[in-house]
Length: 395
Image (tube, rainbow, N blue to C red; front, side, top):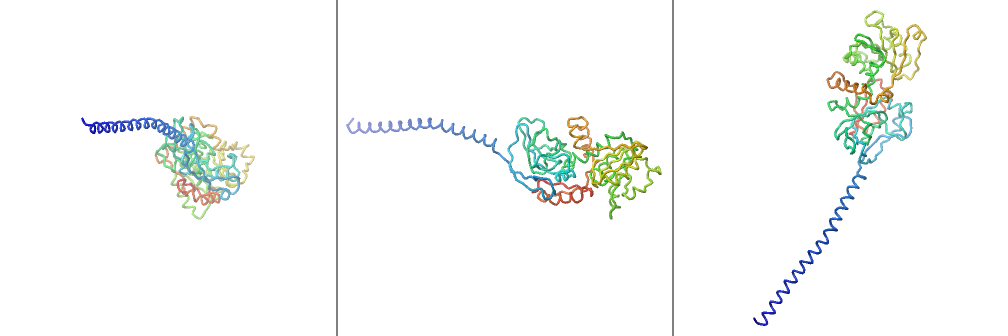
């Protein structure tokens, strides 16, 4: 082989050695790079998880008050963020929130049950569970719930609650039915069950017959075969109102003036009432009590006239009448885990399912128009029988 050929061979060998060296360097660099990259990815993923757990929030709106006074004036819309629910919490998106007289009285500072200020009002409503803490076993995302006690603050779009503070409701209930389930139907149910052992054919008399509770009393009396006598204020459209209440199942509807002169009981058309339900107080309550049977009971659950009650001595001595009070909030606190409460909810839910109960008349008001609903609730004080419900999904 010539010298020139040998030199050419050495050059080719050096070339391939150079390539092999470059390849080895690249392999070494890649191996060194893989560990930091994987470590960086692990750290980044861990940090991201920690960030989502501690800082992931939703923007929610609430009606809030910092002092008592005129409900329309003291309420203001606020915006907050909320964290993910804790292990024992659920996050609830509120859908509908009714406005009850108790809510108005709370805002005015006239109600005995008051949350610490500042506070979000609202004792009643229906919501949907949108997130669940790791330790919550009895509720799932998508469940519909109602408050399990007072002052939960339902006039907001979303909030986190301890899972014990809410109760699941059957899916067959409409949103309207579920939103009103806690207060008016339960109040009517308990007053008819707890004070007098009524039998089919017995008479119940009530004022505020066209109120939300009054309409439910009428329907339950019909279901349980009690006779209901219902007192309402006179008005130009009184015949239309009487027709509406008759359609619900009322046996008799009297105006306040007609009550004073009625011969309904003396004539024997109906037996004298064993139970009277009073949400008005004042002169009207006195007029109602005069028609009670011996040893009858009057249960007072409201005082819309804002007048004191007068009880004649003769009613106590010679008729042995009893005058009692009822507050749904107190009953709920005392019976939170009772079988009676479970039976009541199941029975009422089934009545709604079977269309044996219908909700009182209502008007849905978008959340961002809350002032209209609050103003009407204040000015009419529940006397129209029209329930205002905040639609929390429209803001």
